[in-house]
Image (cartoon, rainbow, N blue to C red; front, side, top):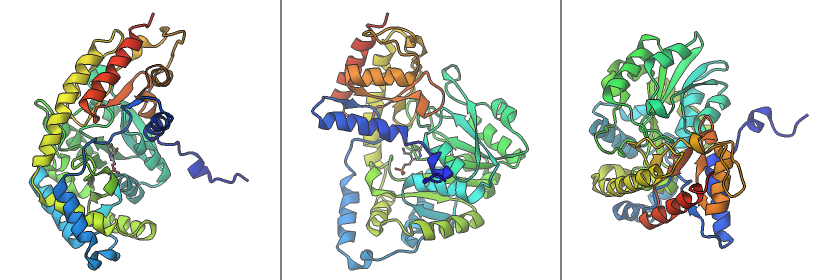
Length: 399
Ligand code: PLP
């Protein structure tokens, strides 16, 4: 009999983390690799948050377990923040504090998906979603929206994919990996459709504060309040406050779902690190000025990278309106020869770029179909320009 269970043997390594690991290994070996792989802000966590954590670490009261669902003060701060940022009320008891948004993703599907249930998954999708759905026994059903529709799925596409087994729709706006943002009208139309057909919504709002130009983040429960009883909201401090390492996320949902997920978490990880929870309270109770500073820097980098990638023949770059990713189509480069190599897939192209230009990017295969590359622009301006210049020079050789 196989040593590793079928369930875990089926899980693929996170492609985004794999690219990052490969880039870091090359860097450690002395190569001047520039990484566009990781979805991680390059800023330090704002000082007022770190100071709160230092003070918390010095208080022995914070050296103990907290309730598995999180510190009451943090659950209250999350409820208050939801009212401030999303415009609707939730009870602190509807909030479960998790080890990053990632644990919230797993627990959301574990809480509502039974074997055979279908989950509609707009593609390109963040690489963790299909794995979390499958681990819960669910069947991810991809609904693909390409570059020509701005990577935004329509209600018609969702309706065409709906079957009697459809239980859940995954919704992620602003999106990782595409940076696409659904308009208030599109968000409401999708929410009404889900409500009409009794489909649950798992909405990942972790990039809510990172929108650009005229785009606005629209909380689906605000525009379709009747969805509150069949929606799980996922969020966290990682992307908004440059707190990826602190591991604090949360899920908000109806009482039965939150109870079930809390029971699971009580056996899995128990509470999130006490000091990290204290840091998250400080983050959420502060104003959003540090966030605005980081957003302004991301916006500047976004314009630079879109312009520079747009100059490359064979690359089609829609302007992303949210998060910190740009997701060009590289279809026009596949099948062409660069330095004696003829990449046929975006994975092969990404390998070529890493080897020849020493620039790390994540291929579309990590997020759905081949034919795309994801660049995270959460890196310093000088590195960004240097890295994309190298990519420009390499790809200009395509014949
Ligand atoms: N959701 C999306 C769309 C993400 O891109 C990420 C991180 O990459 C997460 C959730 C989870 O972030 P964390 O577990 O660091 O809070």
